[in-house]
Amino acid sequence: MTNTNIKVRKHYSAIGITDRLKAALATVEWSELSNRQRHFKKLKEGKSLMKKYSYLICALFLNGTIALAQSTPVQNRQLSSGVVGIAPGQTARWNVLYPTAPAPILQPICSVDLSVADDQGNILKTASVSQFTAGRTVSVDLNSDTDLAGKPRTQIHAYAVAPDGCNLTATLELIDNTSQKTVLVVGSKQTYPVMLCSAFSGANASK
Image (cartoon, rainbow, N blue to C red; front, side, top):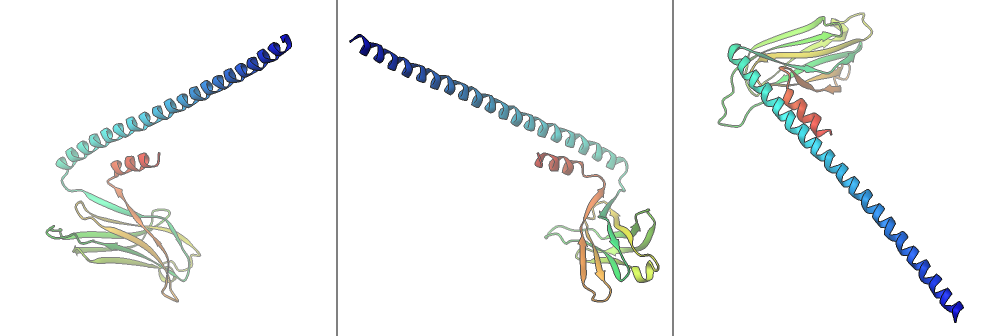
């Protein structure tokens, strides 16, 4: 009888230890989960705070820009392409489009200066249009066989300058002279004035 009681006590004792171990593991897991939740909450709060500060900086920048625009009402904006390499047998075409806007928006008649330059800043080709109306496109060609004769390869980029209020878009094409097929198209972005708000929005979106 005594041996049986000892075995039962040992059995219950082993069960008790197992339950305590399970309870301890559950407590550790719950504590780890709570720590992770607190960590994610702090990260979320940090991102939210960064977003608020970026909006504040953007608002201050816009206020400064408006004040500057009031003191200097005439201001140009510039579109710039990426850099491409042009070789013999190719033509680079810098295309600028003045997109239309839906009615009843009235769009001004614009002027635009187009330029293609090399990687040293030397102007290789230019064109100017004074009566540039919405819906039209203008372009300037740089033919490597005639404009860059004797050069094996030249790194180039293009840019367009127009008055503020003229919202333009542009692409830089690389065309094969023999087939007249476009082999590469590079987009453009506004490089002046600097779009600070867009930069902050992009930075927040990537985080």
